[in-house]
Length: 212
Image 1 (cartoon, rainbow, N blue to C red):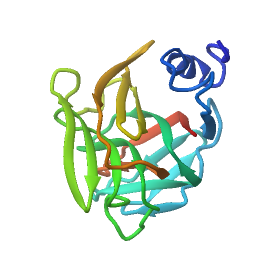
Image 2 (cartoon, helix red, strand yellow):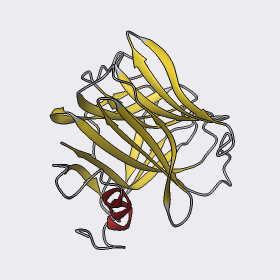
Image 3 (cartoon, one colour):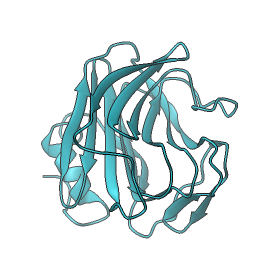
C-alpha cells in the first residue's frame, strides 16, 4: 500500500488503490486535495444560489434554485476519480459528483452539456449528459431515498474513463460500489462540479479529485 490509513483522507484513497483505480501503474495523481481542516477550495465557476465557504465546509443558502460550484482541472484527462462528502439538509436534489468533458459554462444551469453525474434524490442514479440531453446509465432504489436533515453524512465517489463509469458510496466505515456502466460517449475530461437543489446543502472535506 502507498497510502497511510486515517491520515488526510488516505483511508478513503486506500480503498480505491485496492481496486486498482489509483496508485501502482495507473498514472493517477492528485489534482484537488482538500482534507481534514483544509479550507474548501474557491470555485472557478458558479451558478445560481451563492455558496459560502467556512473553513472545510461549502454551504448553499436557503433559496431553492438549482446551483453548482465548479472547478477546472487545468488540463484534459483520460480518467478521473472525484470524491465528495455531503451533510444532508432540506435540499431536494443532490448531485454530488459531476465530471465534465466540456469546460464549465456559468450560463448553464447544469454546468455543461457533456458530462457524467451522480444523482441522489428518491433513488440513487448515474447519468450521462450528451448534446444537452440526459440518459440514465444506472439506478438503484434500494440504497438511498431523498435525504432529510437527520440523515448521517455520506460519501460519494465517481470514477470515469472511456468505456467505464463507476459510482461508489460510503455510509460509516467503508466505501462500496453502487452502480457501474460501460458507456463510451465521453472520452476526456477537464472539469468537475457539485450541484444542489439549493436549500442549505453542505459539503465537507475530504474533497478529492485524481486524474491521469
